[in-house]
Amino acid sequence: MNLNKNRIVKNIEIVDLGLKIQDYLIISDLHLGYEQSLNTEGLMIPKFQFEKIISRLEEINSFSATKSIVINGDLKHEFGKITRQEWKEVNSFLSFLQDNFQEIVLIKGNHDNFIPYITKKLEIEVKETFSIENVFLLHGHQIPENIEDIKEDTLIIGHEHPCIGLRSGERVEKIKCFLKGEFKGKNLIVMPSFNFVSEGSDILHEKLLSPFLKNYPLDNFEAYGIENFEVFPFGKIKDIIKVSQQFI
Image 1 (cartoon, rainbow, N blue to C red):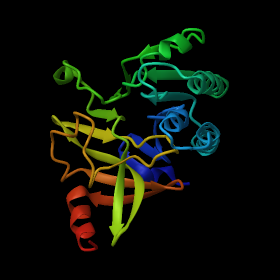
Image 2: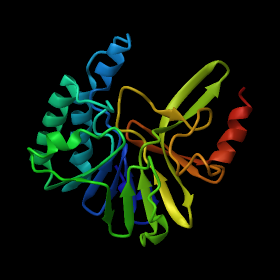
Image 3: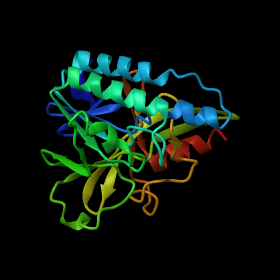
Image 4: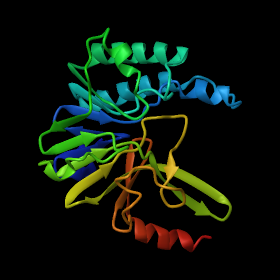
């Protein structure tokens, strides 16, 4: 895999559903325990995601060779509690990270209220934000009050779970994607979810979630589709909309 062709900005490379900056691998929105939440709602989804996440991380690291990892929010799924599945899988996942990375950075997402109860025993700190080189990472569910004072040129957020819904008649094919645009004069990169239960939110047809996006036009944002480790530059959102309307 040629990582150089997957640069989204000059010092950031797309590596499957993650980003690589120096020796850091960044992933976002795992939502461990999501299957149990769906089961309680009556949707009988088998618990397969944990093994898939571990397998995918092992494959990514086989060619990216990163030494540190950043989880950019929403490691677990439930808002107001820790389910049995979450407790088991978060502990197992963090143990896996400790065995395979020299540094672990956890950024708090809006689903992570109870994460410190687990991470404290493993002596892993949960942060609100994190900086690497000239890049500022935060989950993206809220805009910090001091956003104007951030010195870094690039912001990276999760939370949105972006995907592109390509329609052909009645059929819709959803493809996870990265988004790249501007926010208040800075580069803004939006990460897809590292979650294998759901493809995410179709940014062409569904309501946006993040305040970094929902009050600002996406027309000039660029989308990079991800499918089986391949990166597909889709171009600007306004052009994707024009093309997709031809198939309605």
